[in-house]
Length: 463
Figure 1 (spheres, rainbow, N blue to C red):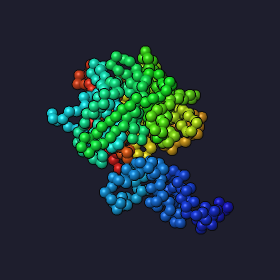
Figure 2: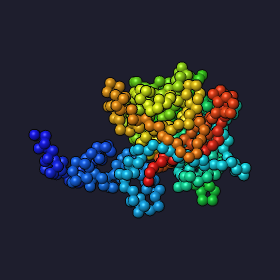
Figure 3: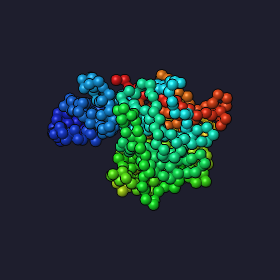
Figure 4: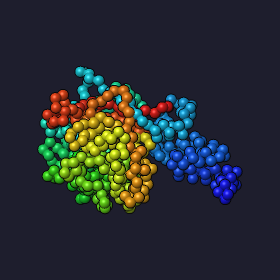
């Protein structure tokens, strides 16, 4: 009886929450996940307008996707009137329920064009509206020191023309990492064709010129006397407007590493400071894995090859706040993964897409079988407390966190040690190169070949 009375008073508007000012309710709703906001909208007519309003859901999109992605989405429409035809709540639902991708080939063979040679373990970044390709490994274990760029702008599906940029530095290498921090590139480490490991840190800046095309300037960053040991085949990502994190890789004498380091750039970008992160537990040693930042405080590590040469499928989250860093493992059971597909992989790509989710593509398993699949991993709404092993119910919390996407359009080949990056919106993924199966013995080294294909992967939204 008391419960019925309470419910009636809430609906009739006499509860304390009903008496709150609209701006206070707005603030409360912005603290809730999507499903809770929708449930709130169903409580009574009085709240439905606010809980489904365009103003609220644009704010929710900015909260969960970031300002850069929302602004890029708005600019993708021809005008404001066209954008208003699709409510923000509809856009949010479409992004949350993406179940397919469409692939497009972006470069056709042309004898008159000079193209990057096929390669693997290179770097590919989207910065200042451009794709920037650097280095990598080539046939015979040779390293490459060339830099290529192509302007994308808003023409994501057009055929692209690469421009070779003469820089002279950094030196040739493969297995390095290069991440975007604001409009700068930060490159670290790598291996050259003699097997030497690097521990240098470089800062690159792209410039667009109306008549001269694209230029890129590199400078060796002053990091003082403290830096990570030399390595290649490690993983890295940007975690703030001035910080990059790296983990693992192959160090001297071929030893796989398990350490975590963060570099913080100075405000004027003239120098950087490295410091080592100590956390227990932490991910075991590995190489060929991925690190991807999905929010201001959370970075996901996935897969790679371990000390015993085994291919891994574990998930770790690095939680970083001011003065606090902690690794937490996410446990799940392979039998709960849809279709029973093999998830362990090394040499894959893992990219943060719109909605704070991870798009994983390709890679190879322990038998060197390369893959062409696309997976979305979503742990964006799992709090740090719920990640604790004693509180984590893998069947309840992670059964729906893996989702395999259906590919449409052009069908690129299976590949590993390729590179991928997304545009500012997080909807368009660019993939270049990698190791692909040869014609004779696909699983054997003699059957491998390097690829020089560039293709686009579009998240299919029903707009």
